[in-house]
Image (cartoon, rainbow, N blue to C red; front, side):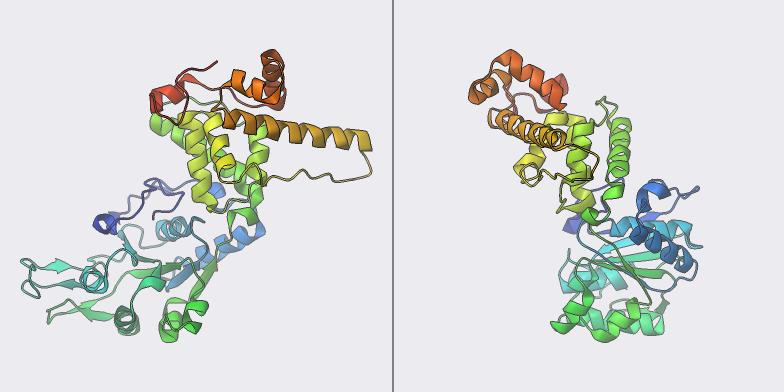
Length: 370
């Protein structure tokens, strides 16, 4: 799957498992986000930035490890964009997308007549006319045979197409990613230790989004602006209440989940994004935290906690009644006018016409708004 910060952001399928892109960098280029968005403000990501910027010029193999959706591919693209190889191709190979024999032909290429159906010769992804970058995405999913062949290529810098006699040279740099620690894969007998040391000249560890909460709002605002430009639509700024939810949510899907949430915010309206958090336990997982700091009286802290709980109850009532405010008011045993007042006080957004324009009469939203 494409990185969450990648402009395409499309799930990989067997037909699109292997892609080659010519870099058109101008400055950052290639549609990459600003550097401050990619790396944020945390010390962990500052260390990542320093490491990749030092190693980009060398072309040595880089291993990027981190959980799904944390932006491994975008770091690989950043390395390519600032490297001397940026004018060459960036070839992404999804190692989990194809079975072994097909993956071998895509990596190394084949000659005409090498096997049934090989009516023409085809270069592999490791083959290029000018130096570029090859991304082995989720390298831990390569089978044992391909691991051995890849090891040989990295050792010698030479390989043959399937059915070929002409020796080819690997002139591109190789970046590998893994969503699972490869040391654990080695201990489980699923990954070669010698290949691990070949691809792990420089190792980069990316952290989960919950471990870089300082960057959540910058990422959210970047996604919002990007989507507004891409879809030529309008959406309200992120409210303070919504921002608090974003910062407190655990984000098991990391940056990709955050991007999807902001996409719902822009395309369907704020309430759809809130519902998505509520539907995955996001709202329920938010805990009321009272932090005595010596400067606030107990009454003030209690009042804040009560408002937070009331906001969550109102949100859940609205979600349970498909955002029909009259029904939500009846559920809460309060007047409609009182509910409207509390919705405004809580900073909860109102449904917008854009929800109907996108979903029509879908069951996901009521067709009439009270």
